[in-house]
Image (cartoon, rainbow, N blue to C red):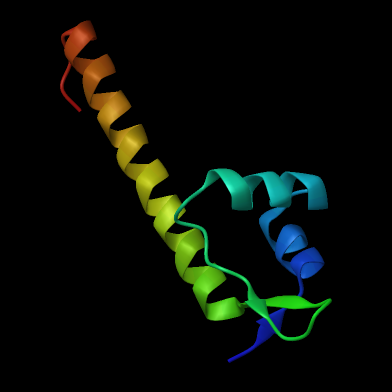
Length: 78
């Protein structure tokens, strides 16, 4: 298990630190932080990677559904 500080998680996700904090607040599925002291929190890298894979899967399903709707409205199959 590898621990990541919030700044490293934000960089991994391609977000600013502010954007990362907003994501944490708004996305109920985002992995919870682990408090290692009064002033420091970390995240389990495996949990972050699983969350990222789940997000890619959801996005892939949405794109597939969108393509099917577009093809149906155009009268094509795909």
